[in-house]
Image 1 (tube, rainbow, N blue to C red):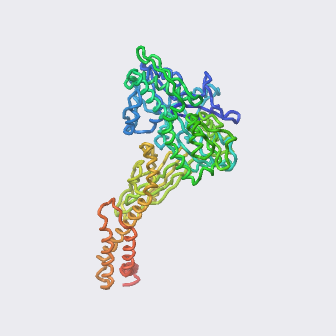
Image 2 (tube, helix red, strand yellow):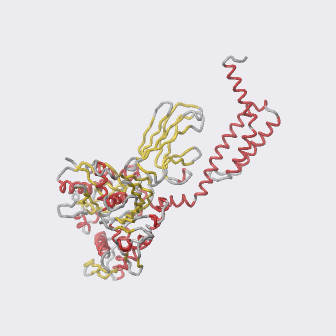
Image 3 (spheres, rainbow, N blue to C red):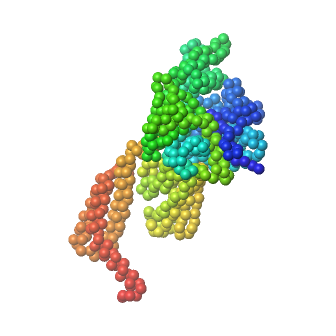
Length: 637
């Protein structure tokens, strides 16, 4: 009988878990290791890839053959990797449609293929531990992974021979793990998830067995790797000051320094100081000196501080204050660092802390009535995998009293006439979700409609990110006659499907958006910030564009009516219409450029006066139309 497992596919480490006798457990390999480093070595001789600990051991001798932190390249574009390319020991190239190819030991590999090797190892570990076939998996991803990154993760699972039953956000999975037996009903919790390569902060509510995600925020390129990088730079500088060899151009030396930096960082989570030991870097030169926790925290603090803005934004999106929370759950290996726990406790006002000591009191004894508890009761490395296993069990019919409702972190919509974004699915909508609207043509004789799908928080289409375009064709018709229904559906994996249907003929087109926002996470953060910063300007722009479109339509209709029946109007009525028409044109002429914003209220007032002035013309046109209809029916001669 086959089994579905939960997998935490991490930047630094990965784990596989399953529910056994109602208990989620992390599975160990034949050597008793529950954690598998997300490192793969591809031997230059063409041999089978080495995965996990074996790859880590060989990295110092074969850095150009060894890939780590591949999760940071999943679903991304080559054009945005200029900085990352400088930090790896192998080459990065451009693949199909501008995607990423890793050039490792004469092999050209997609990031998904590298992740698939890690997943294969986890699958084998689970099959050996459970003594059964593993047919499927629930795989976790950072909450802020975009559509392309989620799709790449799903493809990696398929390459590994797994049916990916669900893609689940990492902080949500962690909440499931804690929620199995630790959380009271009607709890509001924050999940602070700082791993090797990513950070997420999600606010969830547990009510009657249902986890509802209230908000989520984060950065898929912020994590322990950034702390490692700062420590590596520190060690390289100290080696140079001590008269050591030039390390920048030597991949093997850099690999040794990287391993030593990781070891020291881990040790300083429980020790006050540690010896940096790098014997025989070159010739007779060896390097060694003490590194204190205080020195490491000085290096790490700027990285950890960058998580604060995401915490505050997620709280704001959920409409909560720190004291509204019951618990703050810390997950991800980097939360073992005392500085991380200290700052998280400080920001969420959930513990007494001492800046001079650099640590924080944990457990029930520090829980204050004014703030939430800081919960570290589960292993931060294992909580996500356990939660994924619980979600797998839910999908297979177990844990019927628990349900997971996730959200989409950014708004989705499409471009409408005038260059505006029409939101179909607002940010923080519970997924899976389906929503749609009806659209019509804006010009006569259109034979098709271009569906331009957007993601972002700004009013104008040009200020948001384009996810893709596709066209749907229909019969030529006057404007407003053709009607196209557009439906957005975000499935349980967070992947977007767009359906456009011509309501007249039933012709439809379905497109899966498989390459979402190709931008850095700093740009994602900037998008949300700019949506707040430019809220009034954006609203003014939308109001102007909408008023302008209405005015231009009214001007066109008025001019057409005057040309057809102006001679039949009373002179005073025609004079009033022409004056009001000139007034509208004058307001429109005040704004020269397409991107400039005029006075929407002034324009609306002018159009209102034109509407009032054209009432006699409208009555005349209606009378003529009625006469024509009656003559056609033979009622009058």
